[in-house]
Amino acid sequence: MSIKRKYSKPFGDLNTLKTSFFNNNDGMLDMADGMADVLLMQPKRTKCKICGAPLGKPLYHSHRIGYIECRECGHLNSECEDTDDFASKVYIEDDYSKNYSAADKESYIRRRDMIYAPKAEYLRDCLKHEGIDAKDVNILDIGAGCGYFVSAVRQLGMKAVGIEVSDSEVAYGNTVNEEELLTHIGLTDSIGYIRKTDANVITAIGVLEHLVHLDENLEAIRDNQNIRYLFASVPMFSFSSCFEVAFANGYNRHTGGTHTHLFTNESIEKMAEKIGFEIAYEWRFGSDINDLYRFLMVSMQKNHNEEFSSYFSEKFVPLMDDLQQVLDKSEFSSELHFILKRK
Ligand SMILES: [Zn+2]
Image 1 (cartoon, helix red, strand yellow):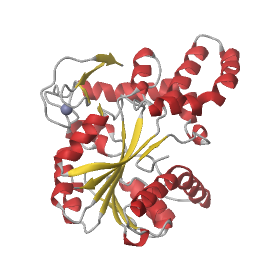
Image 2 (spheres, rainbow, N blue to C red; image 1 turned 30 degrees about the horizontal axis):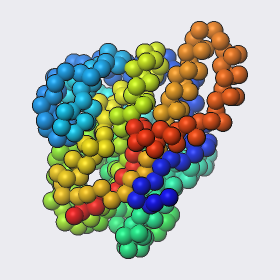
Image 3 (cartoon, rainbow, N blue to C red; image 1 turned 60 degrees about the vertical axis):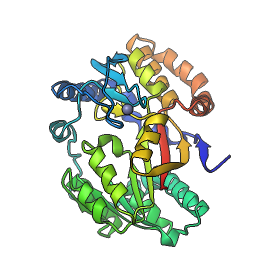
């Protein structure tokens, strides 16, 4: 398989980490509905979040919100804008306790190694392919959360620090890592950090879609010549979006909640072009089939077929990796990791 275009990875134990999606569908759905209430109070979006082209009529509605496909770049935009007001209301602080135990550290490392280490290895391998050794990689991770990715890349010998708006996540990550890897910043401070960083790689894992001022962050990357690469993962307009439209009672993890717009192959290309970068590497692995499976299970359980849902599950689960691989290869699947390179 080419390193430049990679498809799929096994779900493996990832399912066990997402059980709240299965066991607490209605609770999660309520939370997303609350965020939709906030989004619907925001001004109508008039132009595409990525390319700025004027927007027309919604292509479809899901969970009360209309979604408009940009005619220029295909980017999927919710009908209402994500604003500072929206961000301040929906990015609720997680409740991390102030006393961290050894068990926390163990689960931190397990999560880091299961989810973030493969991403870190992918970045290392791609940069190696570019002729850059791990020791020469210097990363600024934006939206670093608890620092899982920063910690994972440092394990591989790359230099990395992170910035993050949640001060409890910063405190937790720094405590577990026993080092000040993360800095707490305000909602729009990332722009200034990007402008003055001496890092040669910016990483943003599941972050770009949340930035209200995405344009200014991208301009800061464009203007800082130290930055040669951008490694990001983003949610894509995909089969997951379609499944959510069909299952109105399912928790809309993908096109809802804090996700007010979704990327397409064309909109990522457009974004790269705008900042003088090009797409150098793509790793496509979605969780569309996982979403479909979850919706089918939740629906069967809601219509009193709990026992039959286990029967179905035994038949279906062994096929999920293969099914997802088909969707990944169609290039209409729910998540893309990519590396943009300065031209
Ligand atoms: Zn557009």
